[in-house]
Image (cartoon, rainbow, N blue to C red; front, top):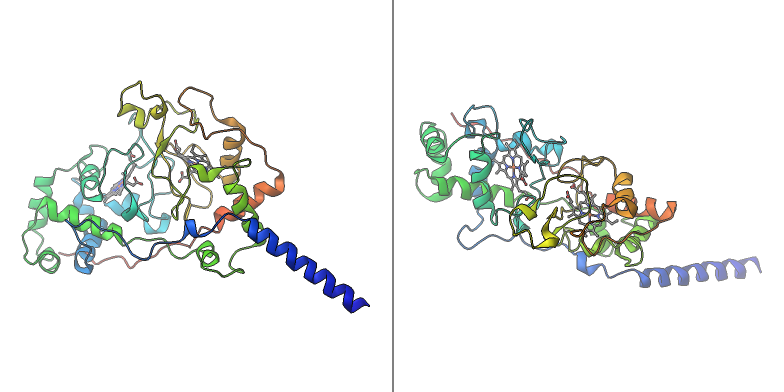
Amino acid sequence: MLFRHLVLIISTLMVANAAWSANLPPREKFKRPDSIPAPLSNPLTLEKATLGKTLFFDQRLSRSGGMACATCHSPDQRWSDGRTLPLQAEGVSNARRTPTVLNSAWLSALMWDGRATTLEAQAVLPITTAHEMNFDLASLVGRLQQIEGYRPLFTQAFGDDSISQQRITQALASFQRTLVSNIAPFDRWVAGDEEAISESAKRGFAVFNDKNKANCVACHSSWRFTDDSFHDIGLPSKDLGRGAKVPAQVTLMQHAFKTPSLRDLSIDGPYMHDGSIRGLKTVIKHYKSEAIQRESLSKDMQKFELSDLEESDLIAFIQSLDGGALKIQAPMMPE
Ligand code: HEC
Ligand code: HEC
């Protein structure tokens, strides 16, 4: 009798569980791609990426000789800097938080306002920006030509040892394309391992996708959890973001910033273009009810309510997108 009861309870549980799984939104939409994209004009090779890695960590790419790309995009800080605003940003109007360069191979719009469209073009900006590396490309080429140890690296990457702006930016872009998020528990679940994430994270996945609940997926879509588009989510910052790049009549672009990926987030922030929010609980609080109501506010920013359980489920889901730090071996600096 007891046995029959147990069987009944277990099978009822299994049916309930199956029904629950069947109700989950499809996971395939979030499946990782199998290969890294690269433009035809700059095919990805190991040799170019190796040169690019050396350049990325080399402080001699800055005028002062004291700042590398890796100073702000550090492997120990999820390829960002862990700061609210970057080094040397004091007094810079509309200074913005350093984004990660993880998964940048897939970016179609770079920078918070999308002002660069390729990694190759983007690489020029930090080198030449006054409050960043403050150098110019011609002087940089001259400086690298004096460093004997760079010659074999350029030769392996490009066939001869001539150094140019184009080769520098192609190598930097190639290295960054190799920086791809580690497999996260969520990816193993998408691949069919039911045990890979907690029941709480699975429920959080549903909340994330539910139009009548958090509806985060309206903007944080695809395997990188971004639509690569720009939205005003109602933060108080005075920065117009994309709005400063387009005519003022384009209402929805005022105060709009690029949707960041939700993979491998730093545990506690700082989050957002201005580093103004710390902690995922505070992020969710913002989305629930605190967005500034203005004309430019995205139509997908509807207020919503979540129970405490739904909220902790949502956080458990976002944490399941963390594949852990992508560590690499720092390169030797050529002399
Ligand atoms: C002083 C800190 C600092 C340094 C040094 C720096 N960056 Fe950045 N990086 C930033 C900030 C801040 C942004 C965002 C700027 C914005 O959107 O206005 C950014 C944006 C980027 C992006 C765009 C990412 C995205 O999601 O759109 C890439 C790629 C990038 N940097 C690569 C590099 C490379 C390559 C170098 C070296 C040549 C470099 N950075 C040096 C702070 C830095
Ligand atoms: C209308 C589109 C939209 C919706 C809906 C949306 N987001 Fe965002 N999200 C963005 C944009 C755009 C930013 C960057 C905003 C900025 O910095 O000005 C962002 C930033 C974030 C960040 C900070 C990431 C970082 O690296 O700084 C987190 C975390 C986040 N969103 C989580 C969520 C969650 C959770 C939900 C659902 C409750 C959600 N988002 C709903 C567009 C959206």
